Amino acid sequence: MNIPVLPISYEHMDRWVASLQPALLEEAFSSIIGVLRGGAPLALMVSHATGVEPSFVRYRRAGRSVIWDSSVPIPPPGSKVLLCEDLAGTGNTLKYCLNFLLSQGLKVKILTAGFDDLSAIRPDYGIDGRGYFLQFPWERQSYTHVYRDSWNNTGGGSTGRMAKDHECDVYAIDLDGILLPDIPPHRYASDLHAALRERDHLEPFKQLPPLGQVKAIVTGRPEMDRLRTQAWLFRHGRGETPIFMRDPQLYNDSPEQVASHKAQTTLQLGCTHFVESDPVQAILIAQQAPLLRVIWWDAGSAQARLIGAAGWAQSSQLGETAA
Image 1 (cartoon, rainbow, N blue to C red):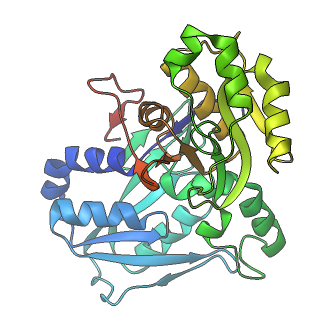
Image 2 (cartoon, helix red, strand yellow):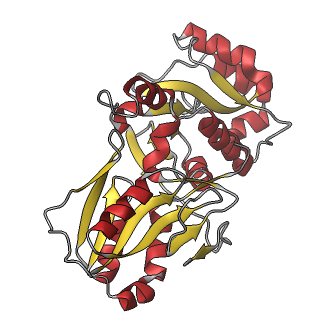
Image 3 (cartoon, helix red, strand yellow):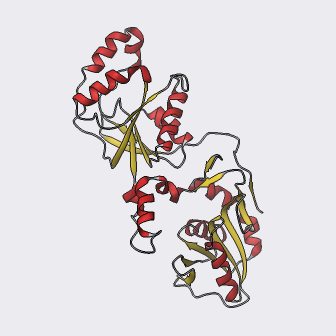
């Protein structure tokens, strides 16, 4: 699929729903109905914006059936309801859920977090994602090999239990400041060769951040340092971990460019988490990859902090409209 990926965060959706509040209040819906699981966050956000109680339906792929999955009774025939789903796609979920509600005699409008060029149903309210591949927070694990293998082995959950989302987490980690102490930049500037020799003889940290499955090391070190970097890793038992180094022809050594190398490489590897030692780098990576779990690890205090960031007064990549 040769189209750009556009991540839509929880914060993005929350702002969008807030912008729709006047129109949604005017609709006077009697119920906000979310499709489990992707439509549930939207239903809750709309419920908070309108004060209308949420309820849920569940689509079962195996039999292409829909059930009412809520302690709240189905609204009486003639009621006006809002059906919430993450994406108006090409599949059957939205179509079957809509038909189920219509068969109950309900008047239905649709809100989806996004619609694109392939959408079979155009929602009444939706973020216009035409020209993009929309990615949501609950899909971060779906791009890992663990998730895809689980999907293939269970027929998407129809023949067995799918792996739980957290079981599919895959980490990429920084090198300096994570596995070994980070030499201050001014030492490189004053005597590069001496700093590199000192770095080659550093001992690894005894305490590492809490990590899941580590798929790769993604470092800002330039490609020319590969041999000496791999030699250090083999000496200290990390030689089998793939390492991805910065190509200076693609990314210079500015903080923004180094962060871009780390963010793009980590996403291309299909990782869900990145552990970074520098707080500025962590902020820049989080800004460039909104759905990546970016963790700043401070080796001095042995504390990990989850980082989120967005550009200030930055023009939107996406037109947010009520369809």
